[in-house]
Image 1 (cartoon, rainbow, N blue to C red):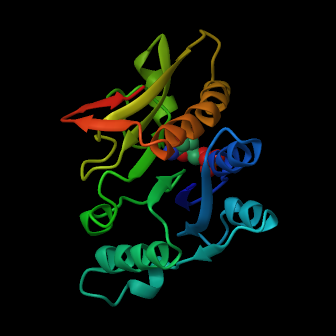
Image 2 (image 1 turned 90 degrees about the vertical axis):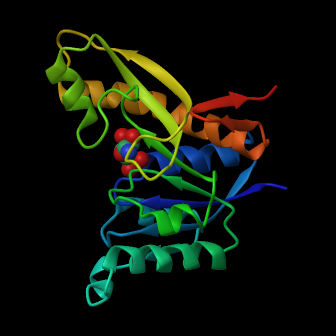
Length: 206
Ligand code: GRF
């Protein structure tokens, strides 16, 4: 059975497209059941729609009156994912901190991609952080989502050399190219049931 995926986005959606391409190309045994965005203008929503994928824009403002707006929003996101039969959630450029209430709905089934070699440079503007630090190597990481931001067990990583002439744009572009290979690969390990978490270590079973 193909892995039933839900993808959460906020913007461009190039990782989402890489996932869809891998599914189409037969290297990822999954199916994207729904794409949810917290931004109405996310380009990824249009890209998904163009491929016949169900999309939902869920406006955080609609939850502003709730006692705990962030949790209420995440409960609603979780319900959408469950209604679409999602078993595994991929955060792909999702610019919101996910609260425990949503993480607990998908235990060990929520992944994120981050444009650095974690635990270096977590949080926003990871590529800029790497350049400003003077790092010679950066890259990207796919990890499980846990309550601490960018802290979950690492599934796989790919390094990218930093060149002296790099700008945030050139480095981001080279890292992004690697992200587009790494994320579908990590999801395929998940689809094959090959990911085993032991504390902080993720084993990829043969
Ligand atoms: C990527 O660099 C990803 O690592 C980070 O946000 C960016 C999303 O890009 N979390 P896209 O929307 O997938 O094009």
